[in-house]
Amino acid sequence: MKENKENFFVTHLPTITLITLPILLVSLGYSWYKGNEYIQNQEIKYSQLQEKVQNQENLLTKTREDLTNTTSLLTDSIQIIEDNISLTKTESQKLTDSLSNTLSREQEKVSSLQKETEKIGGTVGTLEKLSQTDKELLQKYSKVFFLNEHYVPSDLSEILNKYLYSEQKTQYIHTNVSSPLTKMIDAAAADGVTLYVKSAYRSFNEQDNLKSGYTVVYGEKSANQFSADQGYSEHQLGTTVDLITTGLGGELSGFDKTKAYTWLQNNAYKYGFILSYPKGNQYYTFEPWHWRFVGKTLAQKIHDENLLFYNMEQRKIDEYLVSIFD
Image (tube, rainbow, N blue to C red):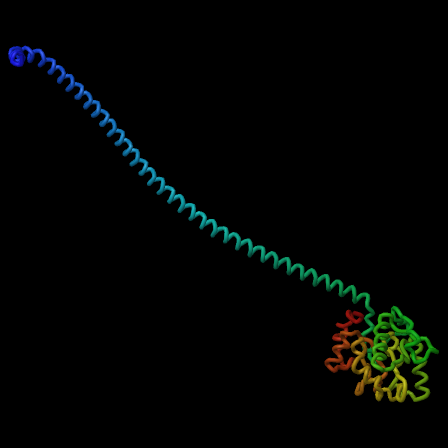
């Protein structure tokens, strides 16, 4: 049986070969075709992929170039902006400095103008004040200047009895001197020193009568040494008082030996009073009781610099007139 099969195969081999070979060739051809088609497709895809990759690379390159260009442009722009900012800051600072200097100059002008205005205002105020102040109040009388019989202080006030040595005669004082006078007497009392007003304002006629009486009693030569003629007395100004105290030497004679006189020497200037006729003056004998109001400022100067009122130049004295009642 086996042999038969082998014989059959050998006998029919050519036929079988002829039949199967074409089929095999066809199959191989088809497979080759399909394989070749696949390869071509893959090559096409690969080519397309390569083209895509190349495009991407080109795009990337361009993007990089654009980025580089943009970066360069931005860097330049930033530098320009920074330069502009720096320039703007510089110009701004210059402008600020210029405006500041201009403002400073204008402020100086305003300040100067304000000071000038204040100065003018002060001058106007001073002139107005001077116009309202009796120019006679600081004149040097006592044989120098003359007050006529019509001169009367602008305002007189009665001195209270408790400040008077004698209540039998009413005494008057310039109204603006009333307060400094009473304050001085009260301050002395607080220090244990008694002071009284013996004589204050005297009119032209009163001085005339007083001088006439002294002339009769002491003679003209002697009377002229301690009493002013009418029109030359400081008492007519209403700013001068004769002060006395109690006890030994309390009257005019010997007043310079009392503690009242010592107190006045040390304190009267604080209230605006000065001693008109100290020792060595060229007008009258030493009168320790005779005190004249000249204002605190001038009295302070006379005290501090040890000056004599009647030895000062009148023009210097007049400078204190505006502040006499300050």
